[in-house]
Length: 126
Image (cartoon, rainbow, N blue to C red; front, side, top):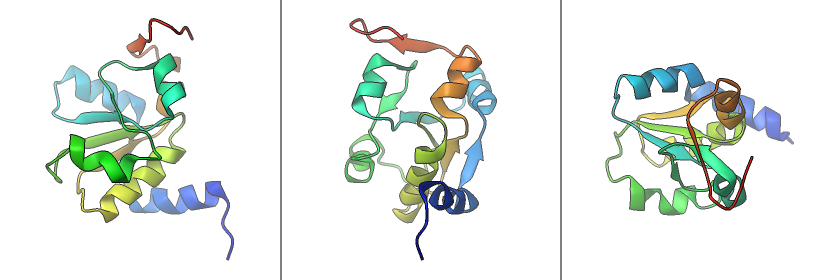
């Protein structure tokens, strides 16, 4: 059986929790206790990212997550460009025993479309 990227993501989305960008904005506004993790590539994150997000790129997430998150029950919200890579990453972290992982559907693109707060690197512009 050969799966495409989108088919693989669709399967992952059946096994994980997702939230909307609006949900994350609401969690931030209500001071919900969670860690927002940007799993995009270094060059994507370095251009601009959601204000306050921790960066752990998708390529090293499984290897390095333990350095940033010690409590496997901590609420983690993952985002990427649109919600596909974060779905795969959420599924992977669940397999590692993280029990409160959520993928932000719509990702960076939806965040920007809604005018969410961002940080731009001094050496880059959008």
